[in-house]
Length: 436
Image (cartoon, rainbow, N blue to C red; front, side):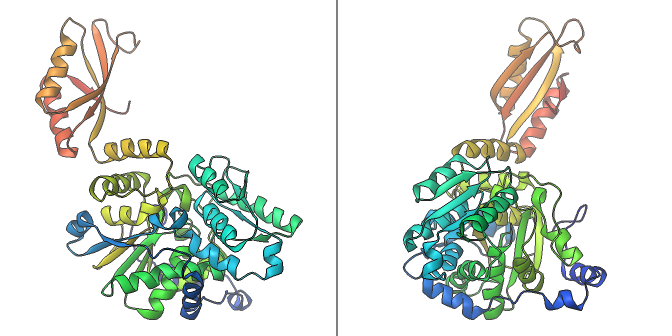
């Protein structure tokens, strides 16, 4: 189980046993473990969702197939209605409310995808929806949620803070709180993703998907382990917001003191009690990936697969590219969402290029004489690199008299090309430094 300082992709089973043995939780606590969702519940959810959701495509991924030396597929929930799998669980939960409960309206909290799922489901079922979102929620997600007919209230800086505000609103108004992950109906709805995968790829050996609160991976695990217990189910968290590794090690949900990641859709500080019970019993492994891993994955999806995914939606692919998990092919990675802010796309592309060694930033210190900059740029061109940006600095107090610094951003063909460029410049007598 990957914890602080642990290797990514480490087995979790022994850590879970150790956590339970040392957690000091008595028999009363064990009796309070939530009942698990059943395959019958998932099948019922699929019947309920018939004609409402889209059966999303399963697309081959040639770059992953080449890397893993075996078939790799993408389950494209990024093209689901409202842009993510979330509508499956939201609709299942709201559809099962009584007429009187639906008349009271529903309330939810989300960084964006659950918000849109609830707004869409509520509109389809004829009930009003109020959605609390963090102040920094991506503007396209806020706009889309409003577009589906929900009232949006921006409260707090994290999903956890928005959750508290939504729960208080439910208590004061009588609206029904629709939890983004910690409810059996939500888990059952999300589990329909796995039913489709098992039908679309009957020989699948591994299913890998992102984990925030754990609703998606719980539903996938319920369906998969009931129908194909031999299939490995692997969850992936962003390393900057990974609450499950310490929770599984402890044997109970543990709150992160702080968390930050570009994958806002899975930035959840505490596992739910219901989802934790499912993950701890049914999920084979939970691994972590860095924001750099995620950026590289999103760039690969755009370049090679012509597919747009949001950071949270691409963590499964990131784990495969980074070799963070032990997998057997055929493997299916769930692209859980595609709702990404265009401004974030620009940052992700640049970040991904840097992480892949294709966008190099460095500083060259050299003598200040006429023609020196032209000579430097010519040597960069000789190495086949493309200069994107140049900034000339003469007045830095760190410089000696007669010295100049040149800050450069350069496009290269990858890490090896970048190394050759830097080696050539240093061989020509230039001082090259990084970290600007």
